Length: 501
Image 1 (cartoon, rainbow, N blue to C red):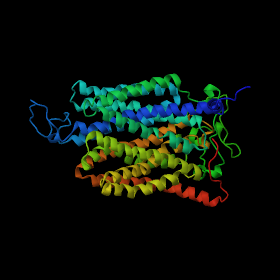
Image 2: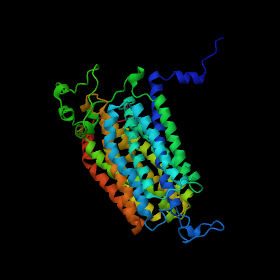
Image 3: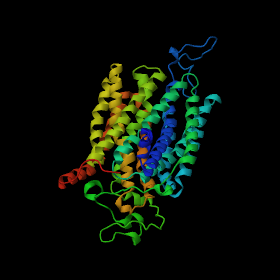
Image 4: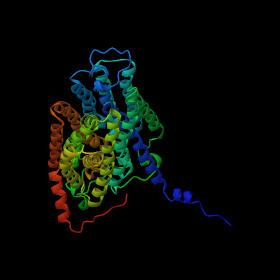
């Protein structure tokens, strides 16, 4: 008697070849960008070790000190201006990241993504480890650390446009918010792993807090070179469906003139229908100004500027805030700060699910940003009243702050980068993603800078700045929210619910 097929084999064979490749690409790009964020996190953990309250630290025997409060600090961070120096480190990374991001998308459209991404990861590993080598080489010049941060910020711009383009190439419109909400948890997973790995070495040899993550991202870059599949067509898989009925997508209804985007009438609309690129032709790369003319790109980019300002201020300053206000040790403050990222994972998934079901990307972001403002105020007021309150408020704030940020940088970027005006041109996705995330990165640079300047006047003022930025992010989405609501009200038979990929 012939035995039945094993359950595990039945499960494996139930998925199509296309599904396996899609899942593999999703996993690999998740792994790649996790390593990017893992290598960014150590600086926020090490800050509280570079400058400590040395009067509470046990001195080694026969150790002569000239200053009881700074003997254990790492020069040049042993001076009263240490917060400004920390701000300089943050911004040397973030400013070059923001500038480089606008250029990165243009290169990403014109170079093979596999080579571009793997080279960027290996170089990022080198510069991350270089910062940590300053500990072993006994380097006390601020310019060495600024240089390492600047170069790392520049090469890290290779990551985001490339991975979003890969995922956008493989996944269509249906359930994009849910899939990318889950996928975008790589940001928080990377932050958590980066915090835990850096925390293992921060009190004994903080140089390893950078060197180990540097090795991890470099090894992951080698994996990228050997295994990344950029497009379904490369392995004879079917391409995804990027567009649905435009009446069901109120945000994308006002399709702009294709001549305005590409500067050429040769592939314009015919009888009101946007014609795709002929299959035998290589798609034309979109210009920077052409990408800006896609409806929604400017509004979402400016919204992300303020949303990312809030998120990155937490990323770089939360461990120090917890250490100063709640009086935790450096490792404990770093571990506790990961709860903000745990909340961010849940918030990103929730934002994706809601926006998929309602079709309202802008409205979902708006609602979460509105709720985040009072929660930030409450966290500053009552967040340190007991460990349970701290845990709950950190997760809630993380979800509300990172949910819109995750949705805009993933599903919204992919939606706009595959807009109907683009005639199926997949090469536009990298530029659109770079514009949105590059504009957001300006906010990412401003947030930690402002926190460094404002924190000496009191942490309350830092939180007022974050709340103001959150409200401005909401206001910038007002037109798109109004448009989505009108679309829902004006099309009563509009279908809600999840659609197939």
